[in-house]
Length: 485
Image (cartoon, rainbow, N blue to C red; front, side, top):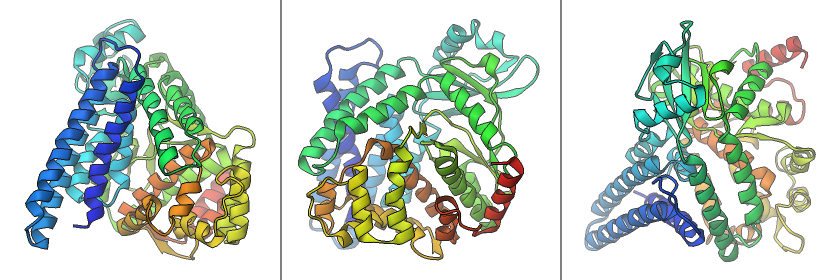
């Protein structure tokens, strides 16, 4: 097993410990609920970090005099056990930490398959709240216990994630629905974690990313996650995306049941479909290729044509269908371009992908806040680093793979490698935070599906009004024309 695999899991435990330790240092009060108690959250992750730190030390000692094959086996066992521990703790703690674990679960391909499988439980199968707590939220929000509000109500959730959990139910008029119920106390837990994140990013800025605007970055995350806590906003987002993608040949958006939706309860039509793992292991390659392009085009269309996009692209938020179409379920974390935001980013994208010009790229990055004046960096070095996640769009055809994701992430996070000077000077403008999450999240999904296609030509459809580069591109152009968009 490669050393990077162990570093990835050990780094996850260390990152969580740093995050919550900073929260404890910043805490001025504690509340009764284990979910909201800052010191409780801090101590849980410190204990987790200590357990895995000790486990790591034992693994290294046991491997000192062992053959390389035995060392690799010990490292893999460490990675798997650590991932299982992290998944259990973050799944119970919810909030920002669990959301971070969701991202790691499918993006970090340096983890062994068994470790990824353990972390994948954070996508939809984390520890749920007690049935009585969920029922209490429903009663407080809808005015009666769930058994009275609905004809049928499932006490056990069908999915449990970072902000709330989903129950299957049947309305009084016989409609099958999904009811998302927010965890009590999750608002305070998220505020705690985001306070910690600001301290952590400030520390990283001082040590490595000296150009990072830590406060601006966390303010953007805080704004988006506060929105995610209000299910009334998510209901409006769902309505908006359903209208915008109405009649689309491959994209499906569930409908809201407004009379059963409030700030902390969101009811939508029930959608049958395959989970990502079911789809990935049972469907034909042709169907998987189609669904991969649907996921990709859903993101591109929303970002570049709609000006509002889903910022939480992980497989737990999708349902896949036998014809290759995809239903996109979750619209809590939606980023909307404010006036001038997208316009400030497009010159960088144009220089990187359309012009492929290092000098123009650096100039655009300086103008948009990615680099400050006086950095003195070689434009070719900057281009080589920044293009890492965009390699699929610099060639006529490309196949996403898990190996490519592994190598691209290794390059991005290698603070002692050939691009160390670029990393040190690089800033991430707040407007780019959620978009960057989408770039990596969608790429990870495509990598797991080994999606192959003319991605450069397809992207040019969106950023340069290019001709359709695939059959699905033609279908989408026909849909746009018919809808008058």
